[in-house]
Image (tube, rainbow, N blue to C red; front, side, top):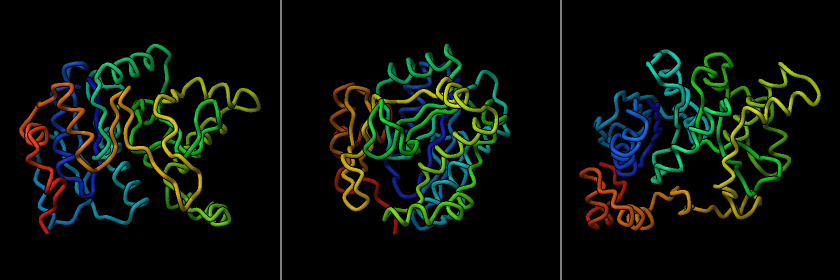
Length: 276
């Protein structure tokens, strides 16, 4: 059993198609998926419950804070509901699809064998073996039992921002959610271990998704060109439909009415439309 949290503000079709993938493709591999959708879009967007087992609606408090609130609300649900056979929760932004089930299955199988508790790629332009510069929050995996113990989520993004904002401003940047998650992960191990044991234990429990790196082509805070696809592992992150339509068609993943419409080119003009 796999837990899957999709968080979303305005990517309606992306969200529906990802739900179809989760319930049709992931569920076959993992013996079922418990799907949670955390949503903070406007009521005027007109979203209605689709395939999710649980729809959580909250207010939108901005880009970084809003994303933090969505992830917190979804993972708090998994914290509170101990679902039989469920150890790992996949967390994805609505527009971030992993369509190659074998990569996901191998990733989680290895995490389980090696007792990894968190998997993410580095944010920014870092590429392994370079030091990570934030943990990807649009695509990560967490051991929910470990999360209950560590308290990584719910994340205190507000506290992180208040404490470190000036450091980021000096670099002509801003305190990102990705940086906040990496800091909280590091601090958990720093509170338990000293000296070399700190980084050994931290790295022993982390699965770096280097196959996705680098996410950005530059670390320049103004001109950070961002990649949108990693076909080798089947990861697509653009809210535009073109790459995703080609990928679904190539793999024969017409797994529901919305994915069928996308493959047929019937969603392109109004993709991710909102009822305004």
